[in-house]
Length: 72
Image (cartoon, rainbow, N blue to C red; front, side, top):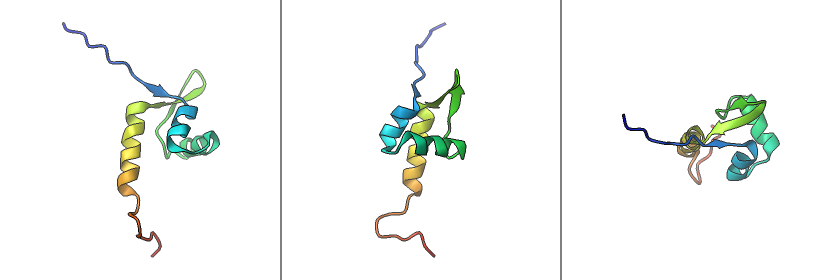
């Protein structure tokens, strides 16, 4: 049986907040409101990098384009 070593990358709140250019507090609030997929490991929040990247893609695709208003 062939074994492939694929490491699972977990992001800390600090890493994810830096990527998103938001504060850790804002990110924590988003996690509490289940806006970003995250889970606790040893009492610390972690975000699976692959799920985080998927979430970013979805958010980018659903964001209004320049010049478009979200008001109706």
